[in-house]
Length: 273
Image (tube, rainbow, N blue to C red; front, side, top):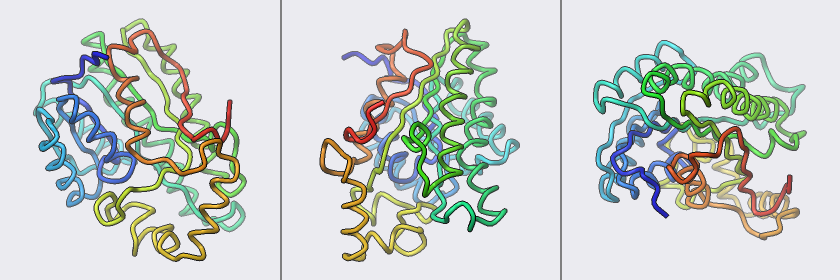
């Protein structure tokens, strides 16, 4: 399949770890120019080095807090100055709280909403003026099956990801006349392949600082988590970043030029919607 992505400029938010890293490396293999947007600059530089090894035509690391509209707008200026254009935006940043709804503090609530919904709004608003001007572009949002089915253990996260799905449809209808496509990919539980290499300090899977990292390395809890996650999967294993990334690449490619406003689940047959 010819993707037409060689030399194209791709922004991936949260590109330093797990799913984001997998997406960056997948575009690198297409010969794209990739801007890695993350708060973890050290991990981003590691991913950029790997991307160059895999064939990226260019890489750029822009340390950015995507919950800040000012930082996002500056990031877009930096990318345009370096690469001259923006062809694809992948809104990958996300963060689920592990607290039940009634135990979440105001700070946690605000963080979840900012990282899971407002960040997508901020980044999309920042790139659309350029895409509209050049009459082309693609936005791929990373949602979650929690936003399609509702997860009682992640209520606010579910609400935000449901918002991302609705946002995808609304913006797709708004900007389609400008030759811009907007789609959404909804993973389920996706595990890093290598905890030492695939996650940075900001990742929920970081072995020491992440909220799931220690549990994932503790055998009793690990077995309970895996059994619960796999109970309803038609494919009885968890997914990997390399299994999410090809769908993102496809939706950003010329092969998907007539696909917009759509939501695709990548979940091993868990929720079949």
